[in-house]
Image (cartoon, rainbow over all chains, first blue to last red; front, side):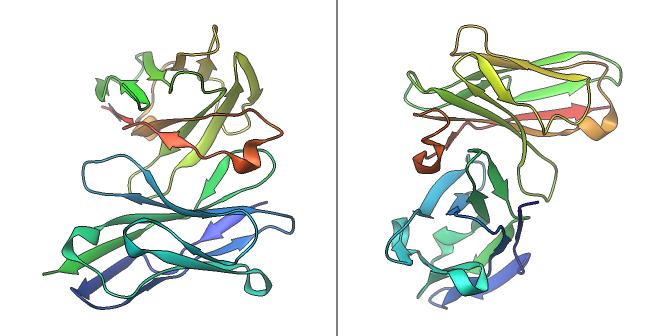
Length: 112
Length: 118
């Protein structure tokens, strides 16, 4: 069965620190990978997605993620976080069925 | 509106009551998904519609859960005889295309309905 694992459940950073959130998935076939963000009081929004091509994908608000097929990983990065990045982040995989399989989520708290 | 809307935003039910949750997808979107998000967890897939056809209901936890999309637009998720373990946020998402092209579909999420069963 497909699954997604996010290793960091709660991350606390100071502003301007660098961020890397880990995501690993288990699925042997072709997958599409996503990072979604949920800001406090708001609905899930797409940060970035990988379908094919360049394994380094750039999303909104300065986020990027790298797909490493050999490691079944899709880690999210940002060089310098801001207080406004405080949110919950979800990694997800989408196989041929269309449904999204989500990880448990990582709560990011950025201290001003 | 341009986004996915859901109603009610909050629902409190007594154990044993039936509830109905509504989802209005983005106009013209073929695919509609329901997810359940328990506290502190990621969303979990419940069911999928392509137009009015329910193509996947593998995630529905029991036969108390029923979903429909009779005209291929608005969808209703019904939970009969609610139990405390049904307490969660129920998310609806829609995407432009149907199966076969779903790998290229971005899913747009609604704000969710927070269900609390007492």
